[in-house]
Image 1 (cartoon, rainbow, N blue to C red):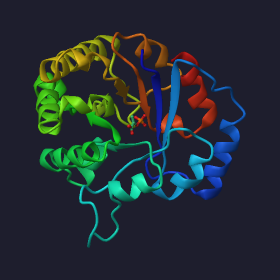
Image 2 (tube, protein in one colour):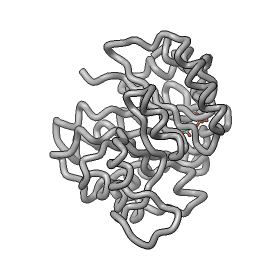
Image 3 (spheres, protein in one colour):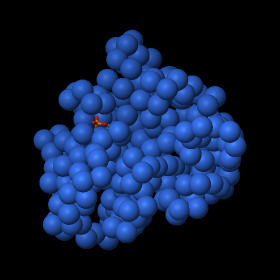
Length: 245
Ligand code: PEP
């Protein structure tokens, strides 16, 4: 049985003093568990300092080339050299605001897999697709494209996060029926693509998870944890999610 995952995606939030305070407050709670793990995805600046406190610190972003004239970018090689645990790929904010298309995301998956680095592959439909009932087809396209050159021998590196765009940072969240439908769909797609070994790939939910809705989200079949934005910025709130996982 793989651990359940509670992953904090801080996005472009928290300054150095705020990160230090976050760690101090975090350490005031009990996070011991044999069945659950915390992951932190901070701004890249804070990765080394957070590695002193957390066993799993990941990067929110990277560029797929190994090195070269790519001003402002970080490579998998560089991140691996400081002992990073995993990376996020395909987050809707990267897709929308920074125009990362499916082909680009396929390259990022290839770069991470080639270096044997774990990754959380995010997927999610927008509201028009949800209302037009094309959400399943859209997710299928996203995942088939991202994983088109991914080999089943690397399945232990893969984690999926289903994050409906209309639920990210909006206060709206998918309901239990919507999450159950999508997670079952993603599982069957993974089994179709990679065979029975894909039954152990964790599939997280993300999108306005908070202490009020966490219990119902975590009780949905196939939900292996959550990727959390806003509610991860306060360790007290984040711990309330942890207790319900
Ligand atoms: C996210 O950024 O992945 C996310 C789910 O954000 P929020 O929890 O704020 O909706």
